[in-house]
Image 1 (tube, one colour):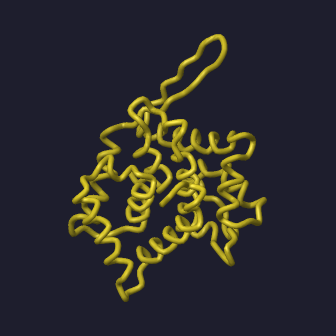
Image 2 (cartoon, one colour; image 1 turned 180 degrees about the vertical axis):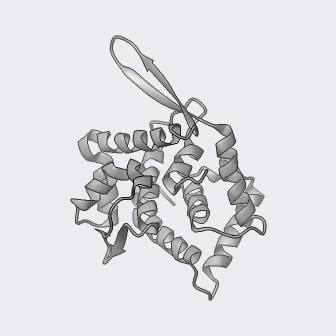
Length: 216
């Protein structure tokens, strides 16, 4: 099963109880992952420090509709887009995006929805399928720690997991160092490639959002 960057990221950061920590920045990083999905699929572009929509949202990324619709009505910088979307409607839009991505994973049995309700409220959690999480991590391992072909998606995903402090959940310090060395090697290569371009887009976006997302 091929997952998008936002699907893979969410699957890797979900806790065993199917939630993400309320005080974490993971939902904001999920917005960044969605933005990178749209950039790498040529749906939006980053021009003169602003996000521009240049294509229609394909069916396979329909779970990003809430964010895509917001981008179509916005003419702001990437940083402003993430800040405004994350705080819009007291965070309801951000939560809607999270649930849409989670439910897209449930449709392919990558997560299991656990619903709870009482007289006052109801809630859903999304229990990650550990087998699917392992597949994602092993793909990263094969590409960036071994000799497999390197893809845009897994390179970008590993960078997001690293900056959001989740790479350490799956890789040892030695492995993380090797992984970063491999990415630096790709980035410094004189040969242009889709992977190198994807890395540059990710680095640019992370640098723009660094202060807001708490990246050091």
